[in-house]
Image 1 (cartoon, rainbow over the protein chains, first blue to last red):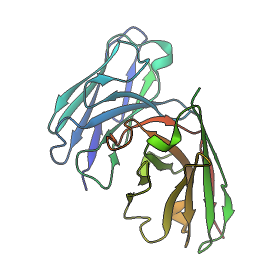
Image 2: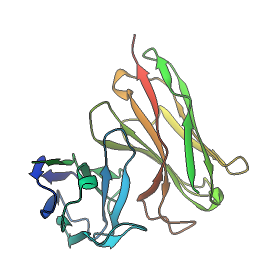
Image 3: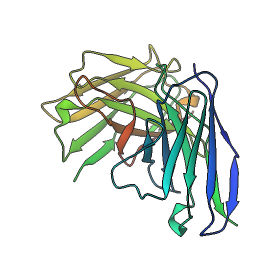
Image 4: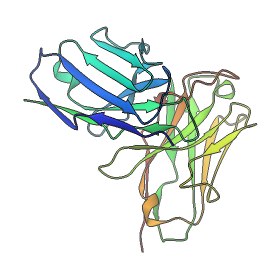
Length: 108
Length: 123
């Protein structure tokens, strides 16, 4: 099973700042990695798939990069609605499909 | 618009059974693979099961294999999860989720999610 490790666990930033979230895989997942956003009491929302492709309707301030074992989600300038928990997920070697433990982006 | 609506959650004793349903509208259900994903209270996401668009392939997480069964009725636009031999560690919100791909080109990412149904396994 591929283990995804997200860091940091919590990121404290102010609106307008740049957020950089990391996801590291225990073995290569090629480019088969997605990012999701989940706000309190809401369902997850697909942001990025295949490492760098924005899902439909996702603002351009969200971008993904990486391949192999190291991936990054960047939010170029945080909007108030971006404060949430972010999860990465791999589909390269499955079952199982696996998620990282999440990074919480909170208001500083 | 696309809607996924789960039902069937509730409180059940360890060893009991529940059947979850997910009614899908706003898309051609029969061409999409579907998943169940769960989230324990205050915890992260865990993939549970996948079913191919035509039900010809089903995959499960090891933690539920042999106890849970995923199925679908394309004539009724409904996804199911039969859960048997429930354990306390199965307590979670269960989401149905649509695969981003379609037909033979499933992508194994989740682009639409239901609101979830809470399953509580407790004596």
